[in-house]
Length: 411
Ligand SMILES: [Zn+2]
Image (cartoon, rainbow, N blue to C red; front, top):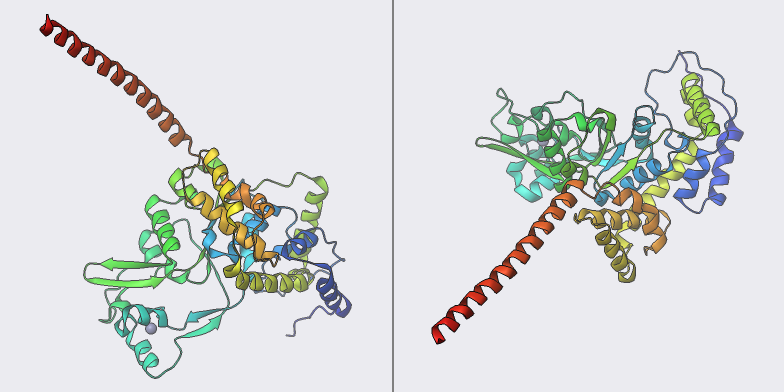
């Protein structure tokens, strides 16, 4: 059976030319494509079996969510993105569609996930015997591969997440430790839908691994370290339970995702979903030129990132603002500055401006102020004032007493 290929030479070549001339940067591209009008589609007769994600750039509206996700891809130092909002607001669609924007990565070809970095860090014993042999012969342990989306199932247990011991496996330590979801997430995107429903130990182990870029599984005398360099994306519906403030703080960017308010946008969103359901291949094809352009913009922004600096005259007032907002967590300015650097890099610049900081401030700084902490500190301050005033009177009285005593002695 031959699959019909959509043949539209004018339509596939024309947008590419427009792209080369009309877009100054990634942001302009994203905004333009969100409003692009689509030619009519011919429905496809149920031939499609592989999953074609809905094109990221075809998502209508939701600018802040799209921007946050793109910044997260450009600069991993941002440290995770949390999407907060009700169901049906394209959160999961947006996350799944990110894969098409990412360049290939070098990945271990071994079942046990051995990497040359493991040998550099822990010696030849750190990898399985097969990989040790390969390494000795000068063969590569990795091969280029596409980035995948690892979705954490809600019913995952801690052994699934970090890995466990395989009792029947061979004697080599690495082979006795079963790789967990975190190790599979290395150089991928890790998506946790409804993160607020996960247990604390699982969330903690994920956040620790995300922060360190690796984690170690220890079971008695057996230990194995795995790389876990991933972009963490979580989503939560606040109607279904809260997230502990400590956990909320460990997410770099927080996006409040609302439903589309504009009726024209809602209709356009509906039409695109219809088109996608009717003919996914053709619909995604209509965005492929822009998706390619965006992917190449992301690649160059990633290369640009190390050169982007924040001048002191901008950084200092920014830190003052964080302090004036009563935010204690240092993560506030780390995320704020790192996302501003990504924002500048996406624009092809090597210096962060005040406008860059303003553009990303809400998603970096919101939900950082802890109500508990401010109440706690207020009470503590009150107590301190009370204590001080008591102490000062206590001091005066005791000095008075001494004076009286001294006076009494003199008499
Ligand atoms: Zn191996």
